[in-house]
Image 1 (cartoon, helix red, strand yellow):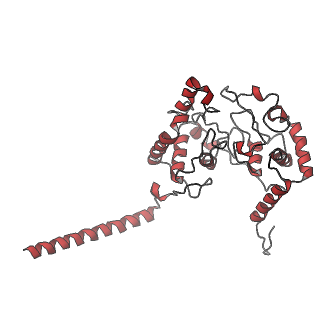
Image 2 (tube, rainbow, N blue to C red):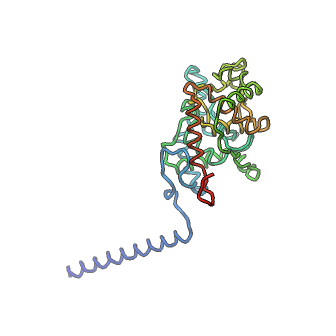
Image 3 (spheres, rainbow, N blue to C red):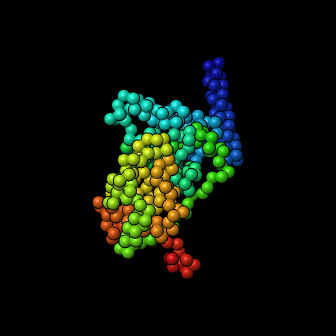
Length: 315
């Protein structure tokens, strides 16, 4: 009897394992045929600024996870409603102005964002938001970098942030594409001299000062769209740039402007050549500026981006 019981038990276990394997194979087949993917099948890359993988599809589960990330990482500054009135801001304003944040946190309910690759007044692309969340803004002084989060968590919180404003639904059919940024030209002395003229023409010194240190005559009078004081960017310190501080990043800022601030778009006032001239002139204010160094960097990029032609040569 004991032997029969053991045999019966072994057979039961074998059958159970077989059923489990069959179910697993079946589930795998169903998974493959439907092309559905679990949230945990998406990229868990950390430390990256540009996305490595694709965004998980937006559904109730992703929004719930995004809210969980938001409450853990963002609510202190941006608030329960995403309107920028988190405890870090409101309590600092009330009890410790000497230590409060330098700027009010972004109001996600208004969906007005500084860093965009889209024209002024437009909503940013998902890629814009992903990079801002990953890189942070202004050298981690007010908006820190969250590149330590798994990529899929950043996509989830991005989706949740978009759920906080009706603009994403109301304007989805009118969303403008990212502006096209061509290959940066190689800078030279005549281009810098021309950029100096553009700087004067656009009266940049009124806000940013004659040497770009953010100390222009109107610097202390500027306010953002919330009516709060805002300081012009110090061009001599690349770490203080809100967006990317390389030539393409600076060109994008001059083209799109910084919504919510006095910094306008120059897309309608300056042609492409003038904007590139202004880019390099503004960059020349930096303490570590070297014309030869930046020429070398741009040349390396141009070579890397060169496309082979039909005869095997590069353009």
